[in-house]
Image 1 (cartoon, rainbow, N blue to C red):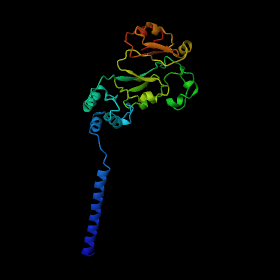
Image 2 (spheres, rainbow, N blue to C red):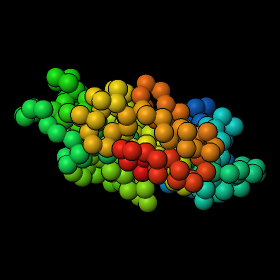
Image 3 (cartoon, rainbow, N blue to C red):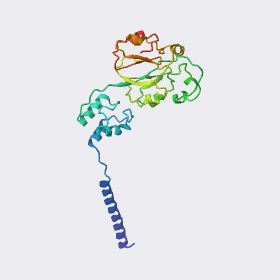
Image 4 (cartoon, rainbow, N blue to C red):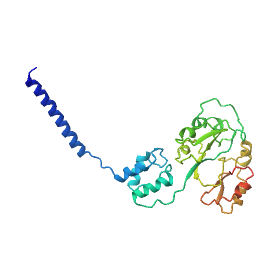
Length: 263
């Protein structure tokens, strides 16, 4: 091979490389995506769980929303007050008060307190079981099915099925809401971590029907309503519900409940 051919090849390769470098450099400038420094800083202090509990697609989505002023600085349920203060500092605003929340399962119908109508041998999935006769084998058609869809959905290992009913460990729960969305019967709600009392039942059947189905089911008798000095309890569809914003935690409702449905 002649020297001329070698030099020609080197020049061609070098020229192509130079052109590509120039093209990439220009493209980088033309198509450059401006990054919001605040957004980057906010993303840096968020926990990075990407659980979606804030209502945005992951931590990056929330960081962008906060930086644009579309979401509050304390919108991350996982990070809580501590992260909210750091984000507020980045944004140069006040964090405001943050109420720590926790998931609560509105059912206490354990295997001892309810009965089984038939033997179910199908797929152990709550979303599937709810379509079988009476919404499941348990005597209460409103109760926890106990197959753990909420357990699988929880990214923090804060909920487990014990004795046929899902139970939340409030110390571990981050209130991301994954379990709330996963429960096909809508038995899980988010309540304040400091809440003193809640109704562990979701039955909307009349009293006599509920009593046959579960030993601790709410029968809608209204004694808790009469006992509450702060008018924090209402009964709708034979089911009691506590307004946590009004509840003072006096315990009068729990004492009066004949079925011990308030815990």
